[in-house]
Structures are given as C-alpha cells and as structure tokens.
Image 1 (cartoon, rainbow, N blue to C red):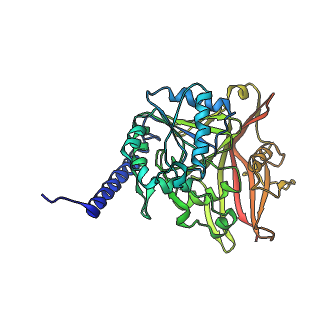
Image 2: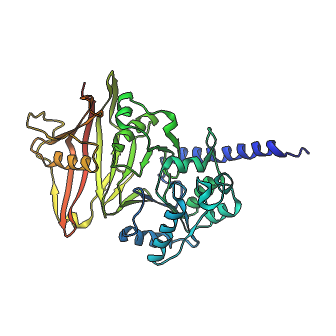
Image 3: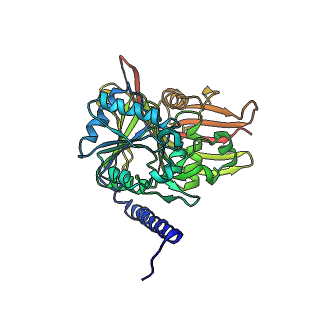
Length: 409
C-alpha cells in the first residue's frame, strides 16, 4: 500500500474536492428542468447589508429558520469589518427572538486572529454548518466571499463551500452570500462593460450554485448601473433569467417560488427572447423583458407568472394606453439623463406603462463625454401592472415591461 504524505496528500484532497463540486454542478444541470432548486432548503436573497430596523425581513427570517432544528450561524467574511458587522447580525437575531453564533472567518487575520485559509477547511466549523438551522452571510463584496469559499485560480471549493451546499440540501435556510453559479464582482464599470460587450473573466467568479444555473443573481442590483453589467454578464454566461434585489429588501426562494419581503423591490429579468448584437460603439440588446415586485408579491419561476399582493389586486390595475412594440408612435418620450441613478430604472418602467406613448427613455453617458448608451422602455402585449397606496406611499407591481439598449453613436 502506498502511503500519501505532504504535497501528494494535499493534491489528492484538492482533486477529491473538485470531483465533489463538479458532480454537484452536473446533477444540478441534469435535473434543472424538473426543479429549480436542488434541494428542499430555502434561499433568502438579501439586498447588500440587511438593516437591523427592517422588522418584516428579520421576523420572517427567524420564522423560516425555525423550520429546521439546529443553530443559527453567521459568516461575515464578505465584509471588510467582519467582527463588527457580524456582531450587528448577532444582535439582530437576539432582538427578534433567537440567538446566533458568529463563525471566525474573515479575509483579514486581525479580525479573529485566524487565517481564513485554515478556517474555511476547519472540520469543527464545517460540521457546524452542516448541522445548522440557518447560515446568514453578512453583506459586503461578493468577490471577497468567493475568494474565501474557493481556493486558487482554478476555484477549488473549500470544505466551507461544500458544507454550505450540504446544509442547503438538508433544509437549512441560506441567507445572502453567493448562491448563484457565477457571481459578478462589484468592481465592473457598467459603461465599459456595455462598450466592450463583455466582462473580463477575472470579474466573473464562482458562486455556491444553490440555485438553478440558468438564473443569475445580483444582490446589489439597483445602484451604479449594476443592472446593465448584469445584462452583459447574463449574455456572456448564456443565462436567460435573472433576479436583482434592492437595498432593504429580501427575496425568499423556495419550491420554484420567489416571494418579496421588505421596503423596496426585486427585478426579474427575462432574456430568453432578447436579440444581442455588437456595433463598433458597443452592445445592442433588444427585447429584454423586465418585471418588478415589491413586498408581498410572488413570482413563479417555471411559468414566469407574477402574482401581486392582495392589497394591489384590490387597488388599481394598470394597463398600457398603447402597445408600443406593435404601434410605432411619435409622442414625446418621458426621458431621464441618469438611468444609472438608484431607482431610476423602476421609475422609467412605471412611466412607460402609464405614458400615452407607451414608452420612456433614459441615457447613460461615459463620464463627461457625449458617448454612452440609450435605454428605451416600452410596453408589449403582455405588459401590465398593479398599484396601491397607503401610509408608506405608493406600491407598484410591474409585469413584462420591455427594454432595448443601444449606443448613442
């Protein structure tokens, strides 16, 4: 019998991890037509860092976590100040009626006086994750978390990554983190991505693959042009559908259903019928279908059907004045010079549905120049919306608003 020691043993372990990870990916792809989630676990997508004051999300989070026995665990490795923000999350769990343990995993050694390269493969920590009720990943930079979860340039999954996959498979609630098959770095410039029609591979990193690989996930969606870089990434990865989560909001994904809770909204992107081409000035995309959901709204991931919250069904149904995709119009556009500004894409979707022309438009300029991109939002045969108003302001649900993107020059 040959006894493996030193480097040979390390290589063997790495190869075994590769085999386990890629088998998991293979099984996901094979069975994707039959179920969008690999297992019975629930995923809660969270818009960046979840505020302590967001009662509706925290109360639902704690309630869902109670469905499986075990401990609530916190991994704050995505944040630069892991110990501080992990402590905030601990206090939030306590405030809403339960307890949670912060795991000592951080990119910076001084945070916990531990090296993440050892901590991510620590048997005690990974066993805790496998037996957990929930794993809460504190918001931060997805690229930082991917670096910790996956080792080396070839992205070998750590024991921490494998344990998180197994926890989800056994019914644990996974909150935030990097649940998609591929994640997009926050360092990508949207105008550059649109101009080049692609994103460098160094900015497309491995995720945990907890959700069907034909769905792209972005939990920083409505700020700094992230929706635009997400579209380029989706085309480059040949991913047809996307979920974009806004700040102070969560999207609970379970049994092919997305349910929105929180104070803002979630975008659903459908690129299945979109046309993609290139010009010397950048990307041209036509026929992107967008939907927008807020608190209480639901979306069925197989049928692609949006169901608004009951309050909106009892409110006002919004039907376009004209189907802009079928009837060319010359009426004046509702326009925006700052389409990348936070919340502007949603405003333009609403304007397209309510405008007499059935369309609106926005621009994104490259710094101080006149070069940039034109965004046209318009209605189609399946476009509609719902509206309700209350003490907290107007609430909208929008289904199937279309968008085209093209360079200005």
